[in-house]
Every structure is written in C-alpha cells, then in structure tokens.
Image: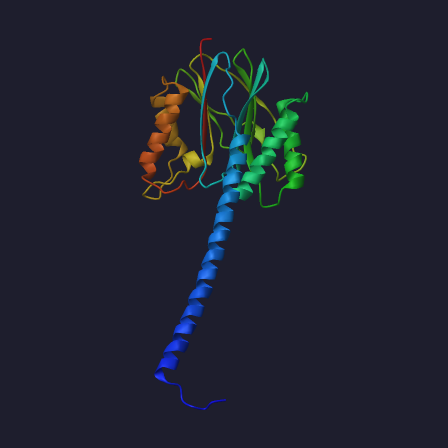
Length: 281
C-alpha cells in the first residue's frame, strides 16, 4: 500500500463520505419508522372503524322512553361498549360495559362482549342466564389480568325493567320526586370467576323518572387540580336539571366535565353515558 501521508483534502473527503454514510443510515431508519408508524395508524384506523360498526348506528324508538347516548374514546380505539337492541316489540335491551385497559387490546375484548350479546339475543334466555353464560365464555377466553364490568337491563312496555349489574358503576335511578337509587343487584365482574350466579333486580319507572348509565371515564375524569370529577358532582348536576331531556342532560354533563378538566389533548379514559327517561306515552 502507499504509505504516503494523507493530505488535508483526503481527510476532508473521508470525513464527508463518513457523514454521508451516517446520514443515509439515519434516513433509512427514519423511513422505516415512518412506514411502521403509518402501518400502525392504518391498523388503528381500521380497528376504530370496526369498533364504530359494533356500536348501535341509531337508537330504536321505544314507546314511553326517551333515550340519549354519548361515547367518546380516549385513544384511537377504546374499551367502553354500549348497546341498545330491540329484542322483540315488547323487550328492549340496554347494555353498557367497560373493559380493563385502553387501545386495541381493550377493543378486542369489547368485540367479545358484542359477540356474546348478539349471539344470545335470539336464544330464549333470561337476562340472568345470558349474563352467566357471557361470564363463562369470557372466563374461558380471557387472560387472567383482564376483566369486564357490565350492566344490562331489559325494558318492558309497562315501564318495568329487569337488570343485572356485573361489577359495574351502579347506574343512578333518579325519581321525579328527587329520590335516588343505585342499581346494584347482580354479581361480580365478568371473566374472573367461573360458574358464578348473578341475581337480577327489578324496578318500575314513573313518568319523568330517569336512569343514568355511565363508565368510570365520566366520574373519574381528572381536573387540573388532580381531583376526580366524582359521582356526587354528576348527581348534583343531574338532580339540579332533572326537567331537561336526556339529550340536554348529556350536553350539560359533557360541558361540565370539560369545564372541570380544562383543555386536554386526549381523554384520560373512555367516556360513555346513556340516559333513559320515562315519558307519559
């Protein structure tokens, strides 16, 4: 080899060549990262589209009942679930559920709840039996660290409801006279204990009574002072505006939560709310 010393131009050339090689490698890595990110974004977009299709596209008309809903995911894909289904002309199912975690894994569990619900709708099962079978299916097919809270109710034309609460935040029954009841009858969380019995509850609504179903993304919304919104604040707002329609109540709650939390780039948890109000006819 030529043992002649490197000249300054040689060193500058080698330095430039090395810098070019480093830049090329960095650019290649950035391209790979961008492709991976785009692929993930596309997968999440498709997952969200699937999730959106699992939720009811419209609310069936139910004589004697006015209904409004709110469903806001915390990420591209959420783990909250709700459904409103006319089983027969005399029976309407209301269901709300909250899956542990967020994102795609939670959405997959949410799809399991949807599948169980709709597979069992045509079967001649009581609400209690349907929840018990759902629990067994989820227990057999869900990881030990995953579980689901759920509340399901069937509404009848005489304004009566049967319901089962599977470890979910107890819905609020607010009577027209201001009395408040928590709908707690049922059993434990879904998917953690096999072959566990669930015990239904029963109520009858009078005109202007209303029921509020919600997930913890409502009551545990975090304010700027790192304090939770709380069920008591929700209840105070609802009772103070009990003459409003369900749609107006949901708008009031959403605005109050936003005022409480201040501006946020993304929700800290999925937020789902259903309000049912009994009417004269």
